[in-house]
Length: 362
Ligand code: SAH
Ligand code: SF4
Image (tube, rainbow, N blue to C red; front, side, top):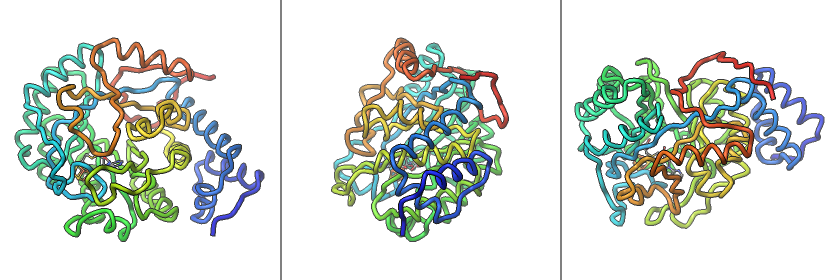
């Protein structure tokens, strides 16, 4: 049972986390459920100062390209699930993807994230070709893929083609909760196996979970924190669950922004060098979400470069923010927003580096 915590104990926990120690399961549980607003503010400010001490005031920017809305999977929470007959489907051609990258590269982007449903028409060799073509056209750019579960051979082919990073959220570490969110043919173990393969192949790997997904308890979130401690991914993506129309969870409540922010801060303290985005889901649910995420420990933004004509079709959940990037001026506008919280855009590749200490002191 989670209960209120004294300020003295709370401060001891924060010091322990700052010193690289983790908390016990019950301590995490109390912290996540019961931190009052002053305690939450203390956690946030410590997480922000850890972020700044490792990355300075820089916020890395990744150009997100949603390459296909077809999906063979049937995750119960996602608007792109195959059983959703109302979902509009599209697939970008190689030329369309390259055009976006070329323009993005000219605008200064040095990371492109190709994300999509598990689209069987995107063959292993086809995606490898696309990666090679991007690397030729945009030689200094990092390519991140986020195309779901594939065979080890496929991940290897994409890595050899030049892919640098892979985002595959573990979604939830708890087996029963995973089974509640997914159809029978999917398993938490298969997901973890993919993450292991990706690590072995030398990808910078991103894992993470939704916060507030149906059936999720605080204990499940603690399972996630412990799993991320074990995996030590280079990137960690978390965001609130948001109901998607025409899915079994369409009428469930969205995740709690407060909880997302607490978890972002905890993750920053446990993973000081990780690349952690302030996610589109957070921005979609709460107008100030982008800044709040960055102030809580995030250091990455992923503006959407998907062509306007199809962007609305990538509807993984309702009212997805169109943090679009139609022209180069977007970066300038973004910078103005970031200046308000003392941060600025960094258009570099922003690779994972342990101990990339900067001398930037606030
Ligand atoms: N098909 C790939 C990538 C696209 S989905 C994959 O599943 O890995 C990318 C992420 O969107 C998922 O990992 C999931 O965490 C998130 N997502 C899906 N449906 C969501 C919803 N209803 N609310 C919030 N996030 C969602
Ligand atoms: Fe497909 Fe990914 Fe959505 Fe699952 S979360 S249905 S794999 S797009």
